[in-house]
Image (cartoon, rainbow, N blue to C red; front, side):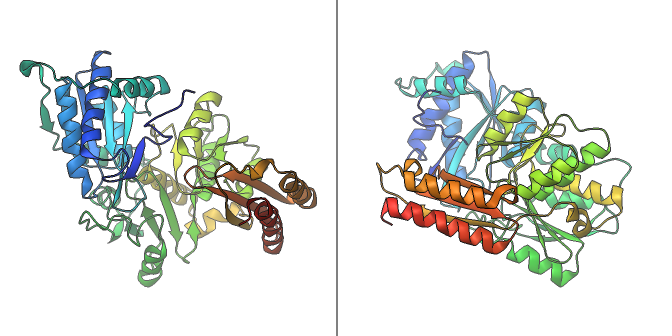
Length: 447
């Protein structure tokens, strides 16, 4: 793949006002994308955003650039990332643009593109946009400028889509559910979906002010939803992230149910009802317990690199439908074209109702292995993963653990860190061998 200048594995991200996330750059990005898309016959693009304050500024900048390229714009307002993927298909638009930094703090933001089929843009199109960015910006003639319109019923359309993924013969009546929307893009969506399906809903993180997105709430900060579930004696809790593409659950006893366990529950149900197509894709960080539990069901399992983009790529390559990450990105391509926290949560609720089991009981089929992660910093130019001492330490750990554990060393994609992860049947084995390997890495890095 060609070296990228702007696009990363999850679009373009950064701190607002720095790097690429500033109005001048975003205006030109809108123009460049508009020029490339117009060359492919596009005349309309949708723009949605999460609730962070910079979204208003970046939305206007994108709108200006797209209009200058002659592209009409449909403005969706605050909407979850998976909603924008869905609505791009529904409105027959050639592309959808999401302004969001997902689970990051409010001062970060990012831009992600979806194609007309609701999937992320292919590499060739992203590279074409990058090449166009190097050209001087030229506005079309005044009578060719794109027009912008507000799509007022976007939220209602997506709510109906989410409800449509839930079995029509089931109802959530009698269930008390805590929903934490992280003060993000699902604040006006998720509670209404669950209420309209019959649940009693208690809410957290539904008062966005532009600055509080993901601030001690949501899928990356579970203390609040866990406490609320226990306090209210709720049946379970939903915790979504700022843009709604990931979910973590809390059972009635206060136990966290992560993405690995959600993937297991969904895959087991798909197998039970004859909807399993092939196997399941996880990542290098997926718990070994998921792999072992799926093996007992004779469901194939493969690992991709970390990142939902890579999970999606491997699903497409294998022709499979179900995959995800332990962070709560859950993909079921039978239901949606991208990770969708609300839809994944509804599938777990359907499994609960079909089985008559609580979430606590439902998750018992998979036993997560203890996992220990240690980060070791390294300097530019150092190659600790290639050092003989590190490789010997890894080999010894793998030999001692055998089938009862797993070792993973990898460079962080965003920081100068070596991530040392060890899983084992016993906590003390995971702690011992991760420390043993981390010490070997430190000898090389001098940290």
